[in-house]
Image (cartoon, rainbow, N blue to C red; front, side, top):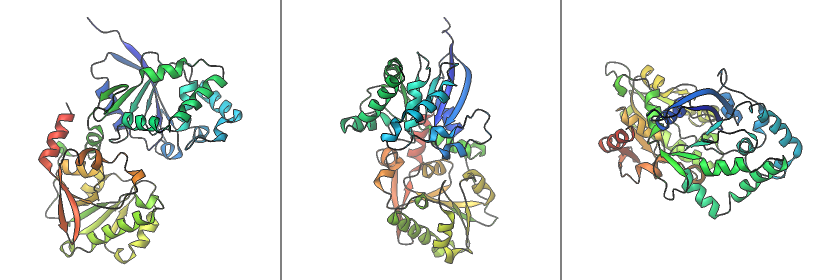
Length: 378
């Protein structure tokens, strides 16, 4: 007997840089055995960074009012004038019932959508984990430490202040579904295992035949250095450690005949990187985040790559058989919650160490990595 068709309108609430393949792959896995018809799709960025990545997207609705309530909740978030304006903007969506899809980088403006939006009664909210962070376990800890208590009070306040029943809030709490990399330690809410979707998405983005890369030994060779993002923060030791790593690679005597290609992360200060590497400027080319890794690899005949040992790209480059080393930097603890090293490389014991030019680097066991990755694709 055929299942009833479930008609869905998807509203993506995006607070970090938009990644269409990531959302599409995760939802494709989730809806694989469902009889679904998608009626309408809209994307609402909740930060300027997300909005900048969505320019010219026909499905996007950009409104800067949604950027106003972000970060930590404070007294200004309770102002009637701001809340009324946001409510009136959200009401423009209420010709439909929506299933909210969010990337789990929770913003306070996102909470207002929960309060004011008409939502699908059967499937109100899908939460995609960001990287390998298991958000259920993190939220459980935050509840114990009372960190989420104020957020829930804010949700309740917004609902009651505008004369709404709290059914929306209770429905979302009860029927939300988390899309996780692995089973939570405490599965208090419904969840679905999407496996290593972020690696699958990265590998697809390289656009390689059979998902394998082979450099041309007859052409000029390059080494790709993926920065760790230290130049978008003001942590002095983080920057200092990263520059030391970059210099160690650049000064390796075995790399005299190689060109060096730097690929920076979004929002990194490229001028500061150039300044700190000024003595090497004749040896390096720097590409910003607008250039794809796949494009850089193929156009520059990359033979080796270096990236942070905390990076998921460390795994994806190994999986396409590009020899890649993980460098170590002193990353601030508040930036390592979703660390693939802590959540994947370390617990699955798929790495070992190697000394290169008197620095310790990490390398991954390809066979173990591929075995775990291929199982997650099923």
